[in-house]
Each structure stands twice: as structure tokens, then as C-alpha cells.
Length: 270
Image 1: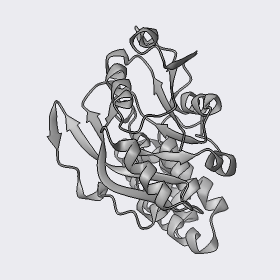
Image 2: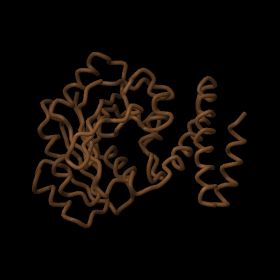
Image 3: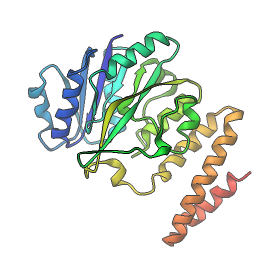
């Protein structure tokens, strides 16, 4: 299996070096490493000097979805692994996933378990984020439980189900995994093979409030294309999320949102 690694980055030069180093430390080396610099104004371009074999592309700042999509376009090989610039891989990450796909040739997407680090210390992962691996669609319906940095995916998946939605500022990964898992099995390599770091100010999850505002957009998209037996599950989740958003709108007296969310609750209550 020949693998292209795609790393989007924006003003994370120091963290990016750690991420790239973890790629070049793999026991199963990828064939190419693609870095998409999403309009950084720090020293990110120096990564080419630090790791001369990387393929570096600069684009004007357009968000992580655009950066990943450009990486997919530039990728030379059929298998793609994503790595966020603030994460890193364990050295046998790719090898374990390659082994999995060689044993499961009918599966075109896999992900792994993860380790969380906050302020330099390993932290216990909340129970709701426990990886199960039976039905990726149901397991990712409430929130995204597949880290992009853990994914190994065949290019034909993008041809069948589309790329990352560039209109979503966040939850773009949640959106893609839901679209894919409607029809495809997403396999779990149930080992901690990536290390995710939390606590730094650049994290998108810290930048945006009310992530369910973006998740409902994705859920409404997949509702339109879901099979009949999946629609009822999606409706229940939409009603739950719009109910929570409604409560938040009432709390902060956001009249326009109160009206919108109350209409949506009625729409998805039947």
C-alpha cells in the first residue's frame, strides 16, 4: 500500500515540526508527505528546510477543509492518511492500519483509538468518546468520535461521497464521516496510535461556541440522502440537538434563534 500523508497547518510551525517528525519516524514509511500551509504568517514555510523531502504548498487562508481538499488533489497515491499539525502519531500507526486493510480488503476507511494530553499530562478520555467500532454511523451521530489524525482512507471514497465541506468552519470531519458511514463500513484499529494535544489557544474547538450549530447542518444534509431505516434515528438526533440549541437561545434571549430552533423542533418531532 502506497500512502500519501496530508498535514494542513496554520501558524503552528513549532507544533508542525513535532507532527512531521512523527511521520518520518513510522515503521511503515509513507511514500509522500504533503503540507498545506493555509496562509500562515509565522515561520511555517521553514518546514521545507527542516524536512527537505516534504511537498509544501501555500494557499491563502481558507480553512482546514480547503487545505485538506487541496492535499487530496495533490496526493499521488491511492491511500491517504491525515494528520493535524497539533497531533502526532505513534511510530507503528501506519503499520497497524496497513495490516488491518490487508486483512480486510473490502474496507476502504479505518481509524484508531487515541491518547489525550493536556498541559503535558496524559488525561482520562471521557466514557462517551470510547471507541466501539461496530456501527460508525450511530457511534458518530451525536458528536465526532473519529479523529482525522487517526484516519487512513482510500481515494475512491472521496469520488463516491465528496470532499470535506468547505462551507463548514468546524465539524467538517463529522460531516464527512457521517456521509461516508451511511453506506460504508469504517473499520476500527482498536489501539491508541495517535496522540492528541489539548490546551493550546489555536484549537478550533476553543474558537467556536455551540458546536451543535454546525452539526445540525450536517445532520440535515445526511437526512436527505439517508435510507428510510436511518432517517428516524437522524430525526431523533436533530430534535435533541435543536432542543438544546433552543434552550441556549432562550437563556441568552436570542430572538431570531429562538424562532428558528422552535420551528426546527416542530419539524423533527414527527
